[in-house]
Image (cartoon, rainbow, N blue to C red; front, side, top):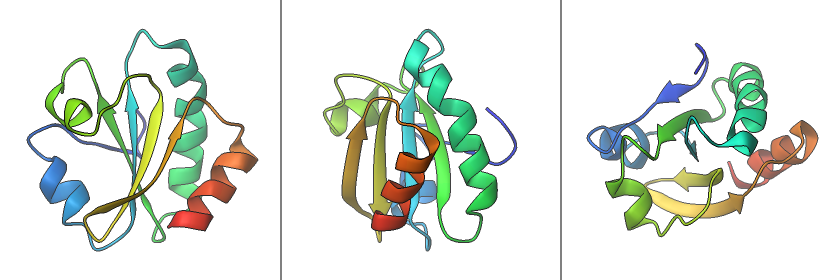
Length: 108
């Protein structure tokens, strides 16, 4: 994880994501996941470029099993966009930067 993305845990999810004033994109990932490693640097870039518009958070599903279970996450990477405490969009799998950026802009 880099400096631009924000780590969240089961314990901080409500405060950091659901109560956030800004839209929050949560990347549910794991260290052993190949596609997660591909999308990670792209999200890091976008977090820097889109600062002030959207918060990009990362949750390690191995260390935080409660939240992914609550949202029915079965495969990773799963990207979920939250706005005003509500889940507004979900994408499963790695995407190229342009597609990811367009998806974020559409839902943020």
